[in-house]
Length: 453
Ligand SMILES: Cc1cc2nc3c(=O)[nH]c(=O)nc-3n(C[C@H](O)[C@H](O)[C@H](O)COP(=O)(O)O)c2cc1C
Ligand code: SF4
Image (tube, protein in one colour):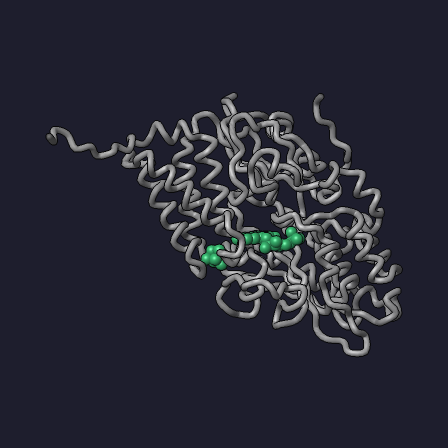
């Protein structure tokens, strides 16, 4: 049965005409006045009439899962914070992950480029609900323009009573029963992929080298500057205003079971019209490509796709119809939905070159703290390079699989998820295109002594 969208009007991109909803050339930055004129900050106003715990409960019950890659339930994460004590108020933080360094991922960028107040409203709601005092937007260094757009929007938000001592719409006595105010800052990164990992991000925010921290303690208990901290992705937070305004059932009605809501899908690679789209979770990849991206480039055949960022692994030639939702991992033998930004490969793609390229990425981005990741990523790159040059042996394929599996299979042997991302990327590409790899390697001969006796 052909896929039909449940959500016919965009939620996150309603102020941003983007394919297929409008002409991308007509986009402009939505300033505070236009944002408010088109219903902006209504979600925050409603949240302020609710007790903070009720806002947390609404987010928990609506089934929102993090849009940064791991898909962790947002409301549940919020409940890990220690209880706020009004008699002894202490700093607690929100760190907004706008690092967006996953190759092929360009979804948060659209929101930052054109509708910054949607994120700011989400930030204000999260801080009100979780009793957080300061928000730091950690934005990747290359997003220079987006950082300036955000700075301007934050100034507007301060001037209009969202942030600052006279902020949260100046509700001296909101339903929290306690006057609450939030400060919001932008912090620019310096271009390291690993700083998107939440604890590396915190280290970087503290002015240190972006090295992931050993967990526990988890950031909700001991995060930024040793204080309770929530880390959420830009797109996750951008969902909050409409969830609070329309209620949990409205959100649950979108998407599919276990994957509520709409999602931004950024499609790149060998398609006629690459672009960013907002659809219900659950849209088949083939529908995205054929119906909305103008089909495969030059009418070529689909060969595979990076599922949702390079760390999630590869969808094989027979997985074009994979439903893009949080159930994709076990169903199609990939790590997960990731950022839902697939890169499409056509029949002419050399998968060995793809494997060498992605292995190089992980080797370059490994922070080097953990031996399996530091050494394994280097070995995998060497093996893939050797195979690409035609100098590999069959045993190199098995060795590559053994190394990658050892990097991901034993939880606790590495500090963060980068090593497992490397594992999924290399392992799935070898397994799903084994014939192509085999045709590039020479058989491994066993030495036999001839002529004795
Ligand atoms: C190596 C690595 C890089 C990551 N990069 C990003 C990133 O650029 N943006 C992001 O939001 N999450 C990234 N994550 C996931 C974060 O650690 C974290 O799960 C996420 O920001 C939580 O927000 P969410 O629950 O709203 O999705 C990365 C994780 C790893 C292991
Ligand atoms: S898994 Fe890799 S990137 Fe992550 S902390 Fe260890 S060495 Fe660094």
